[in-house]
Structures are given as structure tokens and as C-alpha cells.
Image (cartoon, rainbow, N blue to C red):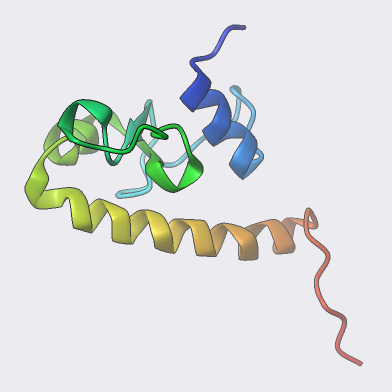
Length: 102
């Protein structure tokens, strides 16, 4: 299956497979879009395809929040929180070894 480069980056960064349920980072519904928080056409970075700039959104949140200046900081904050929480989730699933407390 061919994937757009930014979709592949997102999936690999979070350890998802295309068949996995990928939650919308805003509402938890099934994500159907990988959104560029800073898109190139709106003055974003030339390195738009980095995990710091990519977030999963359901269609409703993408329409409501995506590519709208007034929500950009909101999306950045949610995504930064999601990135931090992902490390904890991977630890719980055993993908990252946890420190052992004795």
C-alpha cells in the first residue's frame, strides 16, 4: 500500500499500522486525516513533514479546526501533549523499557 510521505512519518513515529485504530488527537474519534499544523502554503516551515508538525484528526475536527489561524496554537498544544503521552503509552505497552524500582 502506498502512503503519502507525511502519513508514513506519522504512523512510524507512533508505531501505528494502517490497519490500527488511530485516534483523533482532539476528540478521540477515528482519525482519517494526518494534518500539517503549519502548512507550507500558509507560511509554514519547509520541513513540514516532521512529527512535531503532524497530527491525526477526524474529519469533523479537521474541518472545524484545521488550517484556521485562530486554532493553530490550540492544535500545537494538544499535539505536544499527545507526543509526551505517547512515550508513556509505549512504555505501558512494552515498546520502551521502563525503569525498574526495587
